[in-house]
Image 1 (cartoon, helix red, strand yellow):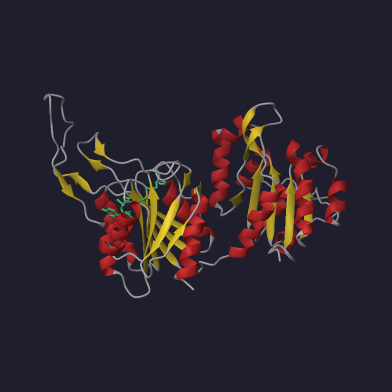
Image 2: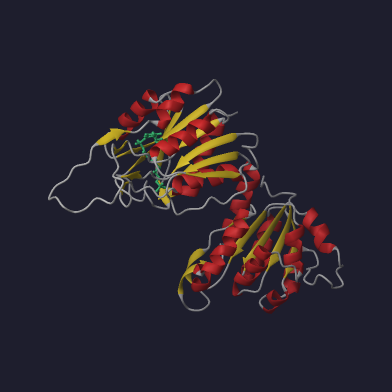
Length: 401
Ligand code: PMT
């Protein structure tokens, strides 16, 4: 049975050509036995008739805060709903919601809603990319709201690019998954390391690596969405962590990451080490910029502390330690070696030989090896957000229940 059965869904529709998809979405939600209350911005009615939506949802459609439908309705609706979906969400409506405006039923209900809120943005590709719009999305995510990814393709303007509203079938599938998982990590404290480390050679140069932080940040956001309290120790990365349950500590060098992780480990239930930590650092970083005087030069390196191995030694009963292995050859053998040497419970193997996997890609392909048996879980190439869900699902299935 669908997890949407019996759920009370507020569906907010704003004025976009993609509003026609809201009719399909309403129908699909009703087919899944959800109860749907449609709210429309005044301009949405230019794109789709309220009559169509009230017929599909079997309820009157609300639009005006001060209209005949009642002054206080937005408060009641905000309390009534199990989820609020805004689809399509235009740049204008997203901007109003990000800044707390409440000049129509849709935006007023948003401020009153105590349920999870989901946005399915729809707009032209340049609007989608504009820094003002990006900032609004970041603000909304920082309030704990969720987004359905926009699609790529031909847009109403005739331009081709990102900005198409997600398909109703995908929205329903993701909502169903959301209600299935709920807050299954509530009460857990999870430490995550992510990103590269930079080891200074002199004040302007460093030894680093190609990690972007995407895999670790995806893990932090997925765990936070699922109710965990997350400590994210992030090396130099352009990414932000966007969830209220994430406490972010930014570090630069392996030794700083070591310090932060070892301080936080004692109080966590699970540590997931997705960072690509430099194994060595220059032994004597120059105080001033090194001048180009010699034809050749060499840099002496010393070993950095191994965070995973240190946490593996101090791990207490009931704590779980998950590592990553980034390999280019003899993948399984090397990963199992690390699993045992560092006293990990689970290791997530990604290989640079797999196209679209590991460093910097938005996708990854992983295999998960377990300490307690010789079993391996093999996953397809998928988005790092979905890989993060797979890793957390595996932890819950095999260790946390
Ligand atoms: O950040 P992205 O661009 O999204 O890329 C993701 C990733 C490829 C960096 C990530 O998926 C990944 O594989 N991270 C681990 C990379 C790595 O350094 O692997 P390793 O095989 O060298 O290390 C094994 C484990 O020991 C890792 O969990 C690592 O975090 C940990 N380690 C290593 C060295 C060290 N000094 N301290 C550590 O804790």
